[in-house]
Image (tube, rainbow over all chains, first blue to last red; front, side):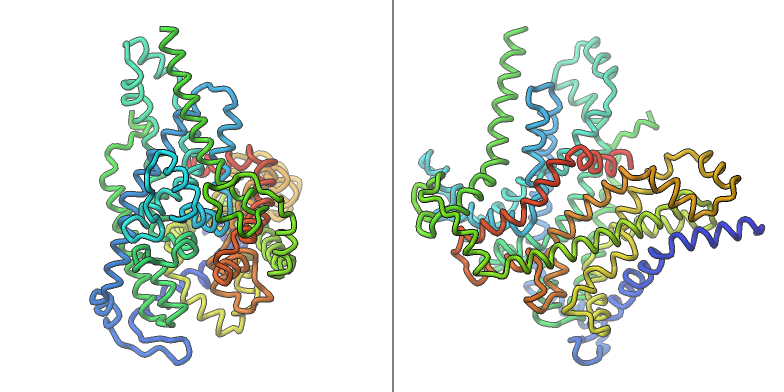
Length: 293
Length: 276
């Protein structure tokens, strides 16, 4: 290494040192410690006691663990495609040259900046089966609305429905993607006599696929970690029908002080997230990158 | 053809307006409920226009919970977090983009990896660490980590710095400027728009953050608005006018900010995703 290269190494390290220190203290050390805790019985008050794989074997024998896993996957498998589709649809509509375009975009985006606590309180009230506006609205059509958050059958669909209020974030990402589609491609498709559906299927969809992949990945990450809205809207009820993974993990760690058990849960979550993301990348042959074409 | 196009456009408008109602109605309901009497809240069919208009709900909210104290706590935590995050991220991003050094790429991949790591994995050891330091029950666990930068902000700023021509730094170097001077006097002023974008995002995260205050703030004199409101909701389950007044007051600063900075905000969301 020359003198100048060494100087640049030290300079570079000096500039990134705030992050580097934080990375070591707030990521690397906690990751290692959390792996260690996951093999111990630990309640914070007394020192961790090594119990090898007991937490993990207990997990798979815990009926609530299976339940929370099911609830989380339900919300992901149904919720992610629904919100991807709705936000894409809105983005396509707003990409048309319509009047008040800016106003519409603002209206659709606004809910995604509302604090989660406020949004969750609002929807808890909105979806109240007895006097909530949603069921009142349904009654206009003589439909007897379900119990929503109060009914174990409807609680998960209700969470997905309320979640649609915040699709503005992915909508904006789609909009940006749509604006990057070269106009020439549509012109060429027009010359070939393509209809609306064909233009969507053979131009828009392929050109948008990297953005769809991005939104899908973000959807997986956020839905596996969903906590605040559910904590406030249902607290996991009724009859644990909305007890999701992150909520149960929080309860174990900070309400029951089973830190070792919760750490094991965190590691299972890490593995599930990693498997899901690798799975998505492995099957991402449908994503079209301009560079390949 | 023209008729078909006309019908298509009418259809688009119809869907857009119905959709806008879905997105807007909850806000209107929030405002309306915050001005109702406790009894009128449960009226069937729901009444949209409160009669009488209970402005006093807002005064009642201030009496029911120490709202101004929670507001002050939230402002303090948010201002410190935003300042710390933006300042440290601005420095770190410089090291990741304007200086070439061996190991830079590897460490940058580590930074990107932290964005995907579920926070639950680091949550418990961090809590134990802060507890051993005696920081649980203070603002320290909420603001000190901000000094080490935010991976998202570093990523955003690095993209921006990388677009600044190298000639500018080189000519400053020939004039005898050191790296810190180049950073603080040349690159940083040029990066103002990107800094503003990062600050905006971090402002919204910390203002609305629920999980960290929930875990670390044990003393109700230190509660932030998010926790204070949740407490109110769990103790006064049916006090909807108060809850909606509180929710509205907590949302207003963000909505106002968003109103003035929509372009920056939306550009930020899309740059991170599409051009990243």
